[in-house]
Image (cartoon, rainbow, N blue to C red; front, top):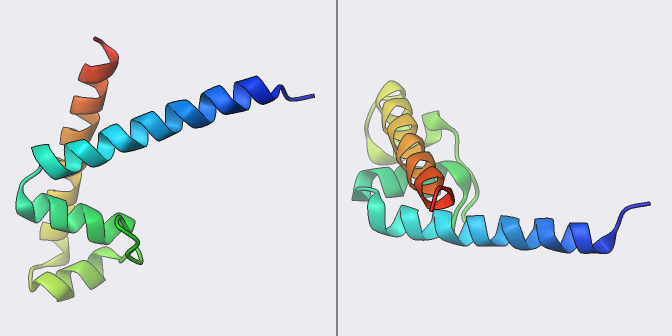
Length: 86
């Protein structure tokens, strides 16, 4: 049997982390990083795109999209980790 209190706590924790991640995306990433992350992960009700699709939209190579995405995800993870250490 699963306790509903555990589910509520987990759901709330996920919502808080998601909200914080969105704030990081909007305030800590560069415009290019923000644009790529939003397209890749379908943020703001967008359909998620592949790296190839993002590269076509932005007119840059897929490998460059990959590097920017990796850098942006590392930044997001770093800021989220710093927050949890507080």
